[in-house]
Length: 244
Image (cartoon, rainbow, N blue to C red):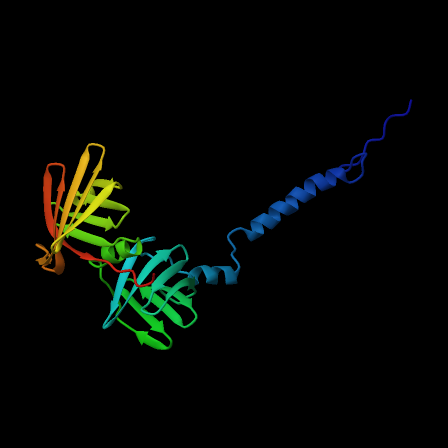
């Protein structure tokens, strides 16, 4: 009786199948081990050239560079910028340090509190943020026609003619939006009334010089607001939309 042939070590009756099962995983493990921890030089350099921008996303920023100013709004990997004569979106580009954005002849660079803007070869240095103006410019770009502010507690009112009135009170803790509004015009004053559910609003805008009780800033309108049984006094101004 013939005994079945016994394949030599490392082989099977199917030829080199066992060898492949052993060698291929072994070679793959060597390849993975050799590549672990190694990043191509060009990839490492590119990651170092793009520095994370620490400024807040989706928030309107006002920069003042001496006698020149511009408005900016930051998005992921890009920055929208409003200049006096145009609107641009600047993509982020590589920089040796800080964060840099560029489109055509407009370049913006910032690092910490430092910032500069270059337009058509002219450089504006020492650009500084003006946080006090940012809410007004943000409201302007959201289509608000009139904005008023007051203190103790902090509040603000935003009016979009023929659309809605937004009242934000108690330092931002409470918000009421009214869409069913009516407007009456008197001598050097305008009255707004609105209601929403159990809440009612009456706002009086008077054309009279008004100074903010905390900042001392001067405004062209005095504003009185009554929300239900609470009254507020403050100052306001109209907002134009020159890009429309």
